[in-house]
Structure formats: C-alpha cells, structure tokens
Length: 81
Image (cartoon, rainbow, N blue to C red):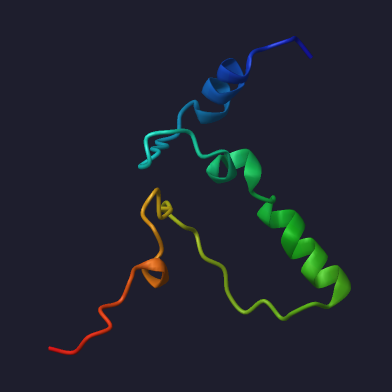
C-alpha cells in the first residue's frame, strides 16, 4: 500500500458520496469506514443465534447531531411564572 496523507485517504473514502459535517469539522466516527459491514453483522447474528431478523431497511442517509449540546444539558428555568 502506498503512503498517503490523511487528507488523501479522506478524499478517497468520500469519493462519490454526499458527506457533510454540520459542525464544520470532520467527524471521523461518522465516516463510512467507521461502520461495520451489514452483511457480516447479519452473519454473526445468525451464526450465534443472537436475534431473529424480521426485516431489513435500506437507509437513504443519516444525520448526526453536530455540535449542538444535547437537550438534557440545557439549564432549566427553576422558577415558575
């Protein structure tokens, strides 16, 4: 394998995909290489009898939360009005 920079690897991984980072920076856990191969997961579920698969979905995309704080971290108004 040739030595490539992290930027070159990122460009190659995202080629042909519409990947956007709402927080303005690359979010490595959301890159395609961060996800497990679905066929391998199904094989393991069946092999180990972990669950009964009743259906499959084909997602069109996903959206992560970005850089917005989770709702439970917002301060609540303690006084009543």
